[in-house]
Length: 336
Ligand SMILES: [Zn+2]
Image (cartoon, rainbow, N blue to C red; front, side):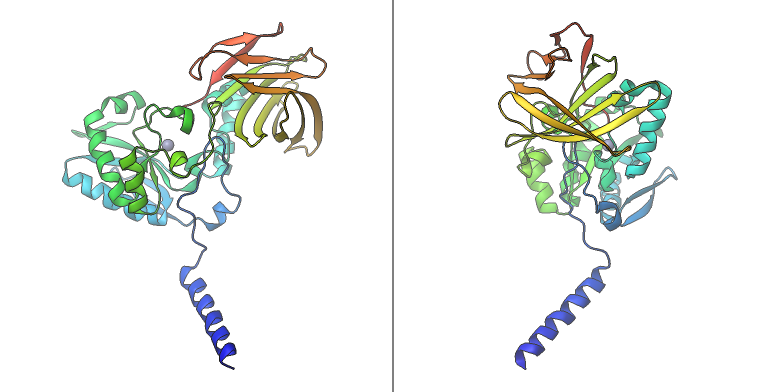
């Protein structure tokens, strides 16, 4: 009987706990970057609230992050620094619309270079906040102008951890984060002690969480395949012999196909299956995909197909064309 009462108490406890929490708690340390996609159940768990700024604009932010941001903003105002929200939550659906608009207006290559792939932007989490500065009644929101505001941003960054925020894209760490320095992009991590450790040690979230990253992150290889289709490959993850990458190609005039694939990587020969998300068919390619010494070489089996290799260090934009196809390599680090 005691056992049953004990069990009942546990059940009542669970029910009370679940009711008190409402929605499941989100993981404030979630990692979303060019290699890691937003978890599929994220959007249903996310609780957003409206935040009204001093400029009379309204932005959607995750509930807890919104409270802490308001506290941070107030504390900075007391020091004479005025930050305002500039870009916050963006749904995957909205990102897809932005992608489609750019692709329609400017073409696939442009979209690939300047627009984040839907599902892979930290702004989907509701925890990433871009801020702008207001100084002497003037709004400073241009990226270069903000980077020039070193002293002001130093004051902002010094206060972040006290409110559970970190600076997400650190200077000189773009090979880890996939993004160039962004003094304006703040990220809520749900805990002041975690934020303090990250900020004091000068870590990226990837380093703090010990997440595998690679020098190929943020790279996008583009060129034309032998059928004259625009081809782009974005390396997302290299881990224990497994490569996850996104292959994007445009077949025909206005039709573009967006593929996601993962492949087992063995020395030399690799078989990979391409599954089209929109049309729902799968397509099998056999070929080589070699990642070695800062080179990415993709060769399809008949030998006539595109082979792209990069040379030099990870900052190099040089491309070596191993067949007679015109190819170019773009390092994509600033689209978010
Ligand atoms: Zn941002």
